[in-house]
Each structure stands twice: as C-alpha cells, then as structure tokens.
Image 1 (cartoon, rainbow, N blue to C red):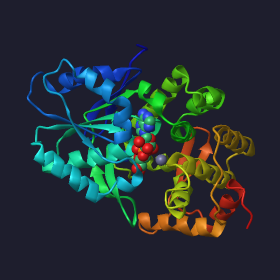
Image 2 (cartoon, helix red, strand yellow):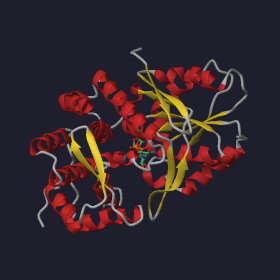
Image 3 (cartoon, rainbow, N blue to C red):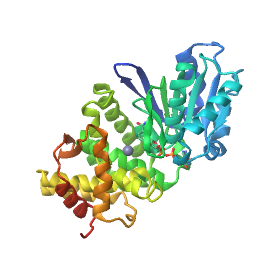
Amino acid sequence: MSRVRTLPIHTASASYDVVLGDGLLAQLPQHLRAIFGERTGRRVYVVTSPEIWALWSQSFLSAFSTDAAQPLVLQLPAGEQHKRLAALERLAQQLATAGADRSSILIAFGGGVIGDMTGFLAAIYMRGIDFIQVPTTLLAQVDSSVGGKTGVNLSAGKNLIGCFHHPRLVLADTGLLRTLPSAELRAGLFESLKAGLIYDSQLFAYIERHAEALLRQETEPLTHVIAESVRIKADVVSKDERESGLRMILNFGHTLGHAIEALTQYRGLLHGEAVGWGMRVAVEASRMRGLPDAEASRVLTAIDSLGLPPLPRLTPRRLLNAAAGDKKRIGGIRHFVLLQDIGRASVVNDLTDNELLRAIQAGLKLGR
Ligand SMILES: NC(=O)c1ccc[n+]([C@@H]2O[C@H](COP(=O)([O-])OP(=O)(O)OC[C@H]3O[C@@H](n4cnc5c(N)ncnc54)[C@H](O)[C@@H]3O)[C@@H](O)[C@H]2O)c1
Ligand SMILES: [Zn+2]
C-alpha cells in the first residue's frame, strides 16, 4: 500500500483526523476500534447508495469479515433530489426499527450527498450520535467530508436545513475514486483549484503543471492534490469554524456557480463545473478590482485546462438576478470573494450590480 497521510483537524468544537491513502477501506475496522475501543457492543450502520454499494460492498464487507459485528446497511437512492428531510425521516425510522441507540455509530459511505445526509442524521438521531465519513467522490474527499457542515435541501433552496456536526474520523481511500466517472473527478478538481487559488499558490501551480496527469487520475499527483486541499480546508475551518469571516473565502466562484445551478435546476452542470464557470466570473471581477492582467489570464487558462463543459444557455441579466438572490443570505449584503493575488483572497461587500454584470459578460464570454 502506498504512503498513508494523517491530517489532524482541530476546531473549537471537535478534533479528528483525516486519514488519506490508497486501499484504506480494508483498515476501517481497525480505525473504528482505535477510536471507539474494543468490543464496545456499539452497533455500526453504513449509509450508502445502491450504485456505490454495487461497486464496493465486497471490499467493504470483507474488511469486516473477521469481526463478529458486521455493520448493517441502509441505502439511499443516489442524487441531489434525495437530499431531503423526507428521505432523512425514512432513514431515521429504519435506524430505530433496527434497534439503533445513542451509542450506535453511522458510517457515511458515498459522495457529498450521502455525507451531508448521514452527518445530519447523526446530528439529530437521539439528539446526536457519532459518525465517520468514508468519502467516495473526489469532491467529498477534498471538500464536503471535512469541516462539519451537514444538511439537506428544501424546494426553496439547497442546504437550507442543517447544522454543524463533525465526524469522529474521515477515512479517504483514494482507491475508491477508480470507479468514479471522469466528469465527477473533474468537478472535484475545480474545488481543489479553488483551494489553491484562495490560499496556496503552490497548490495552484501544482495543479496547473499536472492538469493532464490529474485528469488521467494518476495516483501520485491526485493524492498530493487531495492532501493539500484537505490541509487548506482544515486550516480555514480551524480558524473560522462557523463561517463568520475567513471561511467565506471557500465560496470563491460560488456566487455565480450557485446562480448557474439554480437557473438550470441543478441538472445542467455538476456543482464543481458550475463553480469552474463561477470562478471565471470571479477572476474578471477581481481583475476590475486590481488583480494584474497577467495573473488573471494565467488563472483563466488553468481553469480552462481542466476542461469546462459548455455553459447552458443563460443571459447575463438572469444570472445577475439569480446571483442577487445570494444577497438575502447575510443581512441583504452581497459578500463576494475576490482574488488579490494567486493564493490570496478577500471578501468585499460593495461589488455593484454593474460590476458583476460586466464580470459575468467577460467571464462567461457572453454578449449583452
Ligand atoms: N458539507 C459541506 O461542507 C459540503 C461542501 C461541498 C459540497 N457539499 C455537498 O456535496 C454534494 C455533492 O457531492 P458529490 O459531488 O460527491 O456528489 P454525489 O454525492 O451526488 O455523488 C456524485 C455521483 O457519483 C456517484 N459515486 C460516488 N462515489 C462513486 C464511486 N466511488 N464510484 C462511482 N460512482 C460514485 C454517486 O452515486 C453519484 O451519482 C452536494 O449536495 C453539496 O451540497 C457539502
Ligand atoms: Zn463547492
């Protein structure tokens, strides 16, 4: 097995490790014992989806083969449309029927949808039980499994119900990514590129240099990028667990990314791809506020080199209006993340509609 990296997370309310490496799934039972102790009698429940279980149940269960207590499996259909309270209630009901109690442990085995839902379920089942994350998408490994945000969607919008509840461990087995569709891999890479852009020029430069190898899923560069992305997220959420300041920079590219997703009913592009387009807009806005031309062009080239899929048909005005919806979020003020430099971001709250409209036109290569 290749090198295993352990990245500690410390926030005001929780401390836990992200353990990263190829083939780690086989060690899951040992990790459970290390955290929760030997023969505790605590029952373990895996929450996953049929697609992932079809691919990985054998590896998952064989890890437990010598254990007397096999985990019980609960399934949730794949897809963002199932990240809802109704599905959560069904899962909670299944847990209760199966005899889960306050000492039970949940394992989220899937992408961000499974991770967010399992985390929320763990946060509210019997007022809170332990859970661990075993993320199976690149996005979940570099982003959503770390930081403790959990939740579900409402028809009115994404992630409107939820809470902070940290896992006791994140076990990121890079081998699980081998079955991931290439579009999902690319979507995750956009989030890593974002992490480099806002926080670490070296990670940015590394992705810039290794874009092709990363898209081919070569193990070494991919593992390096995952580790560095996790390190950045860990650092940011350690300093600002509840997103009162610094954590906002993680939303770089997301104002327009979310607008694109909302206008296409979350069916046009994957989240990371929408963020890729959103980052183009944010780069143009940053250029208007002083990011040097040479750096702006370099960033745009790096974004494009990951292979942005075509943008669905949308007018700049509709995008501006949809992005204005974001304004409601914090006291009517639009917080917009700009790049000052590659590796350094700041949040402004005075970006005008006119500036944003011009950035949309330039960044998305749209006419008026
Ligand atoms: N909590 C946070 O901080 C945070 C941060 C970012 C995103 N999110 C959330 O994450 C979700 C998106 O997560 P995602 O991009 O992982 O999407 P996802 O969970 O929907 O997974 C994407 C697809 O990949 C499939 N899949 C997963 N692992 C696979 C594997 N190893 N092999 C083959 N197929 C596999 C899934 O079945 C699904 O069809 C969104 O709901 C978003 O709101 C949360
Ligand atoms: Zn994102």
